[in-house]
Length: 221
Image (cartoon, rainbow, N blue to C red; front, side, top):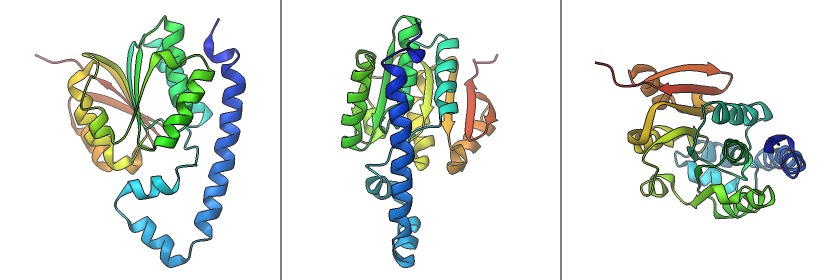
């Protein structure tokens, strides 16, 4: 049996994707109702956490295509230790955990800033029977990832606040094994991250739509 094509996973995902479309539409309407001055001030704010606080009820879910790709990459690479930055309501988390389940087990460490989203993500993981595979941490990822990381990380998924992509990579980089996958969603929002990935001899990367997919290279002699 494949977790990703079976109940309770399938009906849960259908509901989450429907919720994602609805909440994104409602958030867009709320933003549209702001005065031009308030909207400009919000977008000019360099602190991404204020915008995330306003969007705490929005399902910032990955697309179906990205979700399936995460499962495919995690499962085909035989990942056992996965780190995720930005769980939101848990769509990507569910797919990564499903890959671990179908591989026979492992550990997924995921970090989400918004406490209410962590509660919902935990509930969704429990509903899918995958909570036992996930260490879901609440707070600033620069703090939550500063302790108790696996000695070897097989896959890193970046989908939180874009200005933190490079700091999170720097924090987890010492634990990335040779051949580890590093996947960044909406990577164009983090130009410093892209410069590091493209200019460093540590990685080979390519682009799939909004995803920047990189592999950690081994040491050369």
